[in-house]
Image (cartoon, rainbow, N blue to C red; front, top):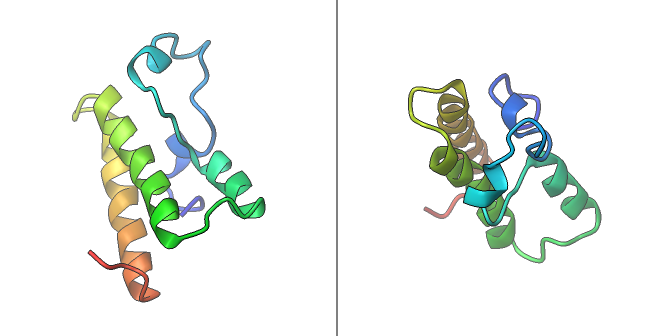
Length: 94
């Protein structure tokens, strides 16, 4: 997922200096770097936790950004890609 062309907004935590009010609106931030660290530390005890963090990336993005932004479009594109890859691997229940 992190190598997808639409992943760039989600590769690292949102920088407070670049987006000062982000954390006023988003109480539970998530990004792909944090997820990678959680994978390495074996934080994810279930697929459900992993999928929930990935879903949080997309929902946070859509909550903060308006639909006409590249960020919002990237979230939609990457979410579809993630779901397709999970289905391919037989790991998607929904």
